[in-house]
Image 1 (cartoon, protein in one colour):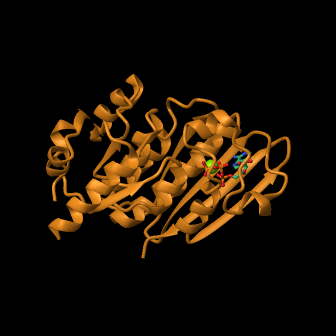
Image 2 (image 1 turned 45 degrees about the horizontal axis):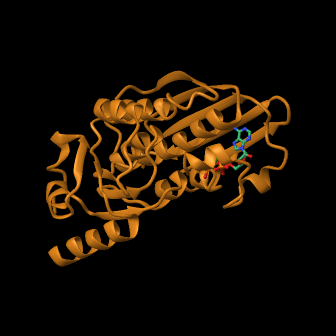
Image 3 (image 1 turned 135 degrees about the vertical axis):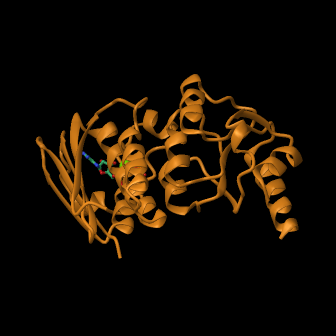
Length: 141
Length: 113
Ligand SMILES: Nc1ncnc2c1ncn2[C@@H]1O[C@H](COP(=O)(O)OP(=O)(O)OP(=O)(O)O)[C@@H](O)[C@H]1O
Ligand SMILES: [Mg+2]
């Protein structure tokens, strides 16, 4: 394995057909790089939930994946409405998903809690009217 | 137990992933809320759901599920089938509702172990 691997992706908001593409790609990439399956799965789940939030609530986002021998770091930086009350958004069951999104199976209010559960370190910052930034770290050992 | 045995015992119709039927099934999880399925299903589970739209494929890929059983004879959308074929995900359809499908699956898996 290289000492450091990094790659960037973009997510387009409102694009439900492509939704999950970036997390699926990241999963494939990490697998190819020889990362252990359970770690790949945790990264993929956290990235998927973050990706779906961009698709549902934001305009677009840049995703950066960084892999070192110690950890995997994913940063999802979106342009969108931002989150006014992060503590509330982090609560299990809290959701502002529309009825259309709920019909598609979104809106359990479990996305952000799932991200937190699957990361070893998780940071979330947001500016209302500008966007939201998530930093997800998963340790390799 | 292989996915093929589940398909045969429960009389399911295979819509994609014909070449994935030799996969081992470790159990099942039923749900229509994607984040709930992501949080609580386990690798190798079959997923029983009413959802038919394309996003179910990514969930199955990310969680390494053995396959998706769509209940009540609902049909996967065109995009769902296209994506499932690309990602090699098995999608099968049950004419029975979720309760019955889950019950039969549970009995089948429980009886085999
Ligand atoms: N990137 C984002 N931009 C703006 N708001 C967001 C963003 N991510 C989350 N939110 C807000 O936080 C709430 C909770 O998010 P979370 O992912 O936990 O649940 P959900 O997306 O509503 O449902 P689920 O993820 O279970 O399908 C959302 O309903 C939304 O109001
Ligand atoms: Mg979400």
